[in-house]
Length: 337
Image (cartoon, rainbow, N blue to C red; front, side):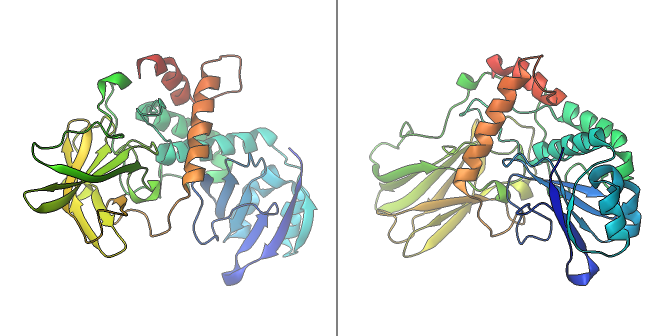
């Protein structure tokens, strides 16, 4: 691993060590593809889609971080930080294998939160227990870096919906996408559409991650116009009521919202149609209190789906680079998904 990093002092006495353009925890809102690892004395980050080999670091305790700085970046950079020096220096890690393990640990944490499992897109979910076991093993291998700092599986996720041990086949699930929905006799469909949802706004394992998981219809019956929203659910155990997703329907003239209820393989809600629903409608799916108002880019979500599908293909080949154990298991069961 080679390259350069720039050392600079940020506000509040923080020190930043990062390749040019690399994401850090000081960014306003982390992109969906950013791996984050809490380290002794700071945080390490990598861009997953950019295949960034050298982590960026934000340090709040340089003295504590000296335990691993030399191993990750090299002695020259460790000494420069110890002396409070800024500048651009060449990376020469003392323990390259430790850097690789740290990336895997950051990636395993990322997968626990952002893996885009989808019955629609045929991306198998990762087994929670295998993932947790590997995180524990990797944390032990990276003890020099994390030193107890990285205890939580995913500090960004307030709740994780566990997937059941047994999974059905993809064709056994009714997909919400598309026009094949039941309309009550005598009702008229005025408009319909489908799309995705912002992964930041719901806990993992709750909804299908496809860009076609959400569908809606504007239905008029007996003089009343409503918007029927359906979202494909992931196989799951019972979900606490406070984590049931909500549907926010927007038009140019107004908004309306309602809680979605589980109905077999989908979540469904019927929302009073706001004015203008016959023409232009957008639907947002969210769990109150989860995520922020920053919207994730659909193009990035698609890149992550492509990335996950490629990881599963590679995990099926035992001669390829070392995948996570949960990826190997998912790849092996992919034909049944």
